[in-house]
Image (cartoon, rainbow, N blue to C red; front, side, top):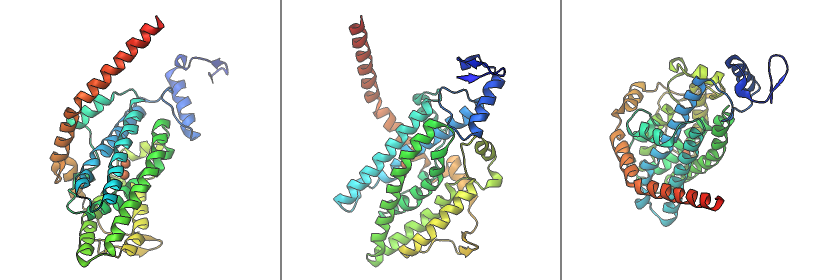
Length: 328
Ligand SMILES: [Fe+2]
Ligand SMILES: [Fe+2]
């Protein structure tokens, strides 16, 4: 129950004027409370969240592909079981996130269509190939590691369903990061060839991982609004710096060299060299090594799964008809 301007209780919030609804929304945001699906929200807030959550969901399911590539070639039964579990976790993350997006009034089928037709994006990192087993370690350590740094603040996102989905996702991501590090740690104590494979994987995944935080702050036009709405809590460059500071000491434990000659410790932080934003832009525009392959594979998986969706729908219809007959 909310009070109107005259201090009288209003039972039905839909009776409030737009200005009153906006004020109520602003108060919730200012108090750092959660916005829930039943609450009024500005159209821009809803649109921003749908886009962000959908692109996050797309990244989770497209991200299954580079690693699924190694399930049949994992070096042991134990490694295969761990990798399978990890790839399944990513499918689950996609599921929670598509569910969170649906609470904003968009259909999952519509979001899939936007992905399949290239009108919505997913994280560019998944357009790079996985060439060796060490890539499984590098993805867990660096890609899931970067994802955690990006996503932990989203557990406090102003939109309730997104924030709650992120809590569980972050727990699973930290398992992913550790399993990746453990793969690399094992390689680091192996043969010379395994050491070279480890270094090569880190050389290829380091810079794309830094790009995962998005463009530099001065070229990130939507960031300020997202911060004001409590969707985003830290700037791209702040999160990127946090990731670098966290990762450099771990690289020392692995005995690998990060491929950045300008990396140096200064005033409490590891300062890194310039990022190749031209490469980022090219991959984002579809010119990465695997963009086409990823989308083609996704479309085919969607078509191959059509019978599952049809069967589930037919079953749900049957259940509904049965319960209606029961009620009558
Ligand atoms: Fe994930
Ligand atoms: Fe993950």
